[in-house]
Length: 459
Image 1: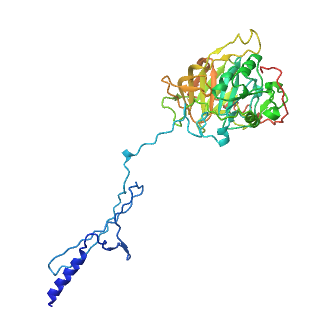
Image 2: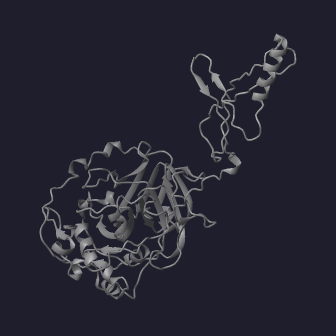
Image 3: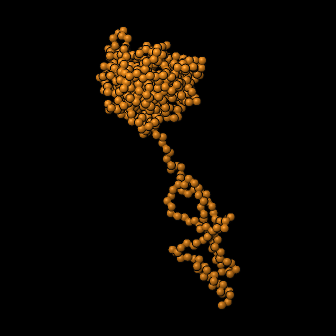
């Protein structure tokens, strides 16, 4: 056979071998990557399910080019090219991805594990399981200051007890302090606060008319007092005598003992109290508020100044820093709520001229309110939607939208009128009196077993 004829036959069989029939295996083409002597198999598309990829991947696309010609001077040469492609596979389309919806925090619904009093997670399961606890704490005369463990309360109501003298109703849930006080008596407003916050109530005593109302209330088994026989060993009401301190100011409470007693009485159930609404971001309509002064007829006053370094408002009482004897820190809050509420006499309960008269602070329906947070203040209204258990204080705009509070602690100051409230952008200079009581913030307690009912039931 002639050599040209032999060459043509050889090319014919080579071409026939390279043209594969349908269904035959893919050719095992090998590619030598630039810069390496190691051949790698070519990558081919697969039926991998379409999943968005966050990381771009290189796609290797081999291209085999076969050139056949009848001219014997050309050689059929399979060639492969390496084409890196940095296009993400199955890139997610932003328009098809729903934007996450923030979980609302109040005023009606709260995420699981969130404390409706603070808008923050409960510190532990025990806090979530126990009930709100209202403790009546004295704020007058000045010798009772500094009080103990007020800074551990989730919410504090400050209300007029009588004649411009204020008293605290501290609501505990996140914390369970062993030393709170000094403990003082109940007032008519407590008959509203207990159902509002579906709470337990701890108080020293009260006047006969108010005690009769408490004993007749549906929540009577949620109330605890030495006046009802609750003592030091079983309920945590213990006397702490101190030289120069009158007897009525020596009662303190161990909340751990009271919660144990509430559990044994089957009233320690972790009910929610709905009303506050929370958002880390302040509403955009706020006005500057760095110094807030509240006066109760010249008998008691409170000044709150904003501390940008902590985001807290710090309290001064009677022009000096007001401390907590438990932690040695100045009283502070994340939110200051000021509400204007009618104060009415109850001559049907208290005869004219008695020394134990208690005003009816009508905390139902609605009235005007200020909310102060993050160096800003907002005007709106307070509302108590109904008088059902757990229907607590709401702070709203005129269109019923909630005013967003800062997640954290709240102090509620109850006043007769906003003429007693001054809000300033500039802070008053309190440095001159800043250390007046700082040296007496930590008493040395010595517990004395009780019970020891106070001589004055209204004290």
